[in-house]
Image 1 (cartoon, rainbow, N blue to C red):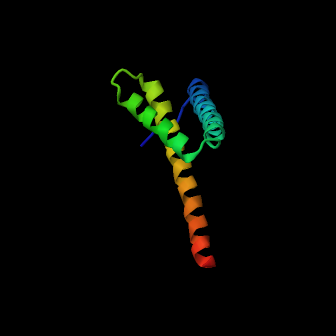
Image 2 (image 1 turned 180 degrees about the vertical axis):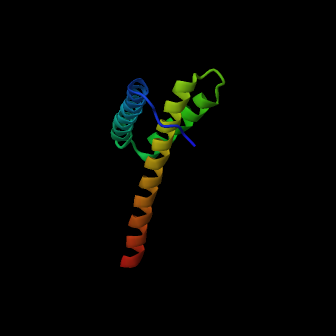
Image 3 (image 1 turned 90 degrees about the vertical axis):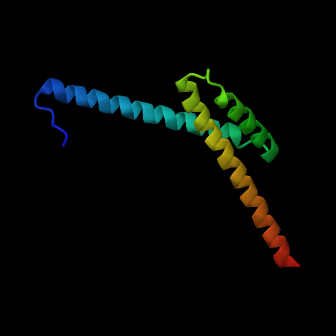
Length: 100
């Protein structure tokens, strides 16, 4: 069971930690939005190629952990974009089949 802060210094420390987490979450959200915007302009083939390059780089044992984290996030967004493009094509094919 976690202990509650007992004095004002402990409360200030908890508030600072909470603000730090909020700042990191905000920063991550901004990064995700920036990456999504960039990736959304890519074709399926371009996105898949970028994902493959990123995966090869991530396999390197020399990649620092911070870069690994960002690369994982970026790779997830490339994959999401590819899946969305494939879903769109699948729906188009489905509609073509219905029109026959």
